[in-house]
Image 1 (cartoon, rainbow, N blue to C red):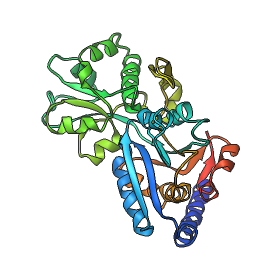
Image 2: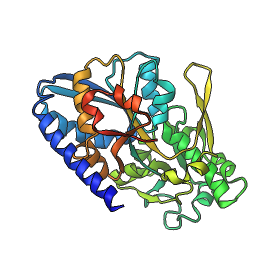
Image 3: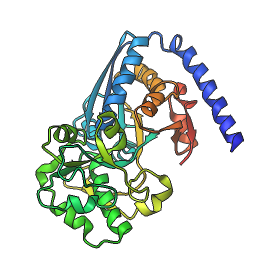
Image 4: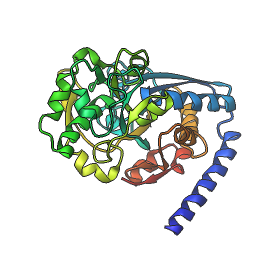
Length: 328
């Protein structure tokens, strides 16, 4: 373990030196707009990364559009909207909807976990805890919601958590009882839209990522690793949860299988400003840059970031190749 820790420290130091050197050299001349479609849960950290990057590259204007990850992907594949970078809350969305026609590679850069959020205004706020939350969600008069599973990974992950809770706690009907108490109007396009509903008292409970709860100062219930989708060691158990969502073509569907929360990022094949986009990704995926922002905001990054094969690593822009390792 000591050898592994020493290797990572040396690796991080080398990357930091490269990061400093390249900031003033390789990308000093980048300019123009960089268009990013990103998962809503990345909005706050990407805003900080944007400020850092534009301060070093004043000729670049980073333009971000937040939406559910599937919606982001479909802006590229269906609507053909110009885009340089797509950052997804579920790397599988990039694999299923963009590769190979619209992107060649997919870098896994961070993880997260699901929590049940609430405020002091919520019904039963003084009573809810890690042992009774599923009973409270099924009570009459309790208003709870999640994001749209067809547009946002947090939506289908919320349903996965409920499916897994039924198995973990061995309570038949847990899932059906909870969902029966959640009208369709409580399903919103992306998970961060639920934050304002919580804060204004118009919703009692909502499923969010831990990082979103921390960034917005919400109260939240931490769940066991067996059901929170935050620990890859339980991927076999997570895989028992399956949610059907809309597919690549209208009228088609695909099954999303449970797995630990893993974020992915790619650059679109026909990126309008590939050079500046590569420079931004170099900042975003650096331990001293964007990954530090994520860590500071409650979202654990992968250091180094990951790609599944050596062939994919070789296909990355050269400035990004030293920022990733080959690892499933």
